[in-house]
Length: 286
Image (tube, rainbow, N blue to C red):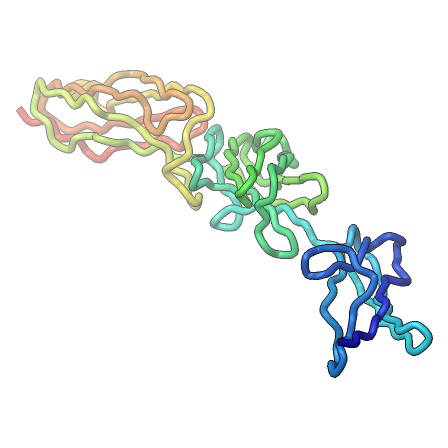
């Protein structure tokens, strides 16, 4: 069967060498395509991948008969972006607290995108920094592993105030998120409302709460703390004066309330950098 040979090539490449070759369906390099007798079009060939942004034309020629060129083909560089996001928009962190982080959930995550789509190709090291270092602290780097498009980040609240956290990686546009360090509050837990003289309540403890945070009750002390407890009427009931609160834990060690005499009292808990917490009235019965 007769076949008409058509020479194909890449011309006017800017920059030179932008596209290396034209290939067939199997990926082999070709310089000709063929139009079979009775057909109006040739077999299919493919332009190889470009090495960078630029322009080129495809030229087809039937020697001694006809030559034609395609319109200018433009290769646009992929837009590679690092995103830094908090599920609630701006990141809210308690002073002296560290945000919760697991393999599945966090107050802050860093994500890589290429042309708007999540990218998971290869390990990517992302550098992090707080613009105002006195307001927050972050790890120097975090790695987005092969097969994943994002990684979670833990943040420590510093001085009260607002700043931005920046994430950057080689070859990617950097990303930023606004964060604010606020005063956290103590929450008293397991305080009895009614006890009898001589009884004890031995599980009183405190937890932290950060108003407007994504996970308001899941930010924990970055450093060990001492929590002070007082009873408003010690003649009615006494409470352990001070307990420890270990770094990275959800609750303080327990304090013990001892009912001394009939009457009413109230327990208050305080710790450096926190809004104190006061219990409801505790009634001691005979």
